[in-house]
Length: 308
Image (cartoon, rainbow, N blue to C red; front, side, top):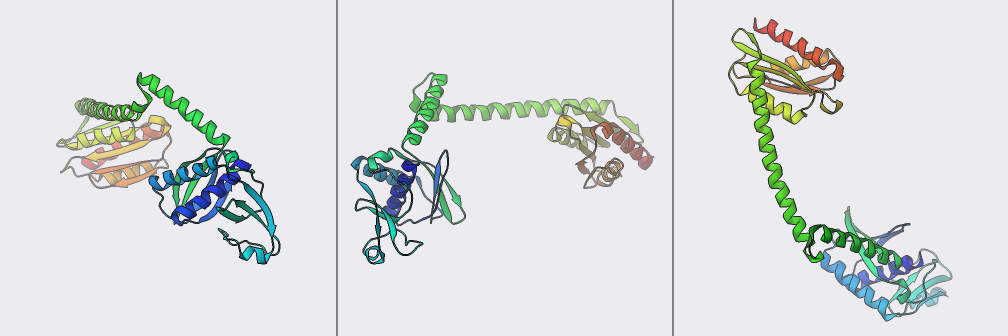
């Protein structure tokens, strides 16, 4: 804890001395610690320079002293922040660099702080929170990350310096493969929709299909419904129970005298679900998977009654 506390004093003083940034609040955790700076942005160059300077102070091995002063003595010190109490004030001084009113425990020399590393920053409203590690925590963090990096390099059978480039290349290859898979999947869905069309129910001049899937997600069902909708004289009543959730899509071709949104709303309402949409395309859900087939049967009966 003393390494983190003294390291925070050093890091806060560094941000103030180099960049005029004040530390608004700090938090010391069991794994890492944070300090909030009064700036909405903190770029990498600022962090790198702050780390370089703070670690230079560590290697300088300056003495850290704690002592008490009265109000007269306090007035002569260049305190980084005004104290919150009055009377005798305990000062923690990093020799001729930082003077802070503090009642906590500290190491005796900056060299005892060990390495200082900011491992993460995040914006929090109009401030920036920096997560930092000092001393043995920083050493353990370095060892863990070094091991991961070397493991990644071994997997690529390459030097560790090439890992970022190799990962970027692999990501791009994965995107290309995924786009190809998506295209093939859409083609297969189109073939499946055409097969459903061939087995539809003829109602006057309209071909109606009602089908329950167990292996298609909501997006795939929408794609199939859209394909059916694009063909003349078609009504598609499709549902899926994939993943234990019911997704329902109703669609009809242009010129078919049927309101898909109203039909879907009425059918799902019978079984405690909900949804809606346009006259030509609607979607919903919220019913028990065990009721999905009965809901489709109800909807098909309504289509027959409407179109005959």
